[in-house]
Amino acid sequence: MLFTMSMPQKHTVRTPCAGFSLIELLTVLAIMSSLAVLSVSAFNSIGRGQKVGVAAGQIADLLEQGRALAFSKSGPIRFGIVTDWPSEPGRNFRAVLLLSRQEPTGPAQWKAESRVRTFAEGVRLRQTVRSNQEGISLLTSGLGNEMSVEYGGQNVVVRFLEFRPNGQVWPELPGQASLFVEETLVEDGDNWAEILTHPLTGKITISRPGNP
Image (cartoon, rainbow, N blue to C red; front, side, top):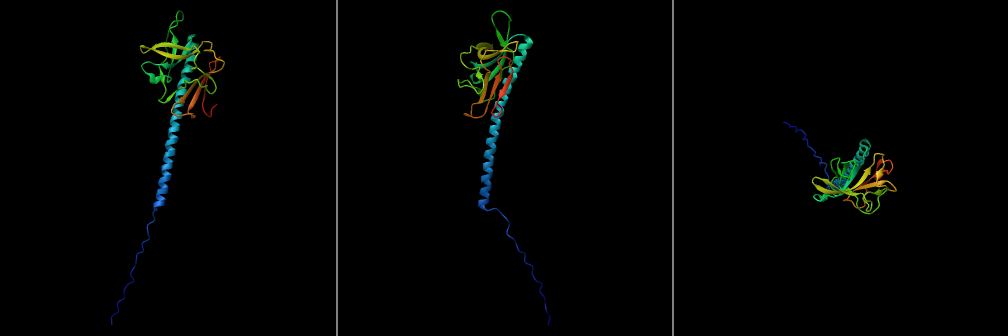
């Protein structure tokens, strides 16, 4: 009698693949969405702060140039803030420049000493009567520091701070002359900077939130 031996059959046991449940997937998506919202908010805040910082730097740079020019030229130099630009009203309170006197004697005639610098969109100098943080605003009414100057073939109205060769500034104020630049898209936010000029020395400083 013949005996046949059958070899034992091997059975492959398949283990179920590890995966994510629907609840786990929804949880991950919710976390990712929250992180994205926080990232965009942080990015926007940084962008606003950078715009204000750049504008403050532009103002301080021109003020320093005006102070140095008044000394080197032995004559007055005016830092002007455009308050009425007939053909470009969108640049009102957003454009600044330096002005020099054309003739040392006779009626005062002023011309542009530098190119006009315009702040980024949404950033402008505060023009309200609300007091600034530390100084006295150059845009306060009644100071007598307003003038009209020809620029680009038209008369542009500016408010100014004048540097004298001795280092002092005009108008004479009982404190530091202030220019307050802010992000207008944020109500009562911390996106601001105040540029201060000492009345006797002409020294310029910048004050910002967290940096008094």
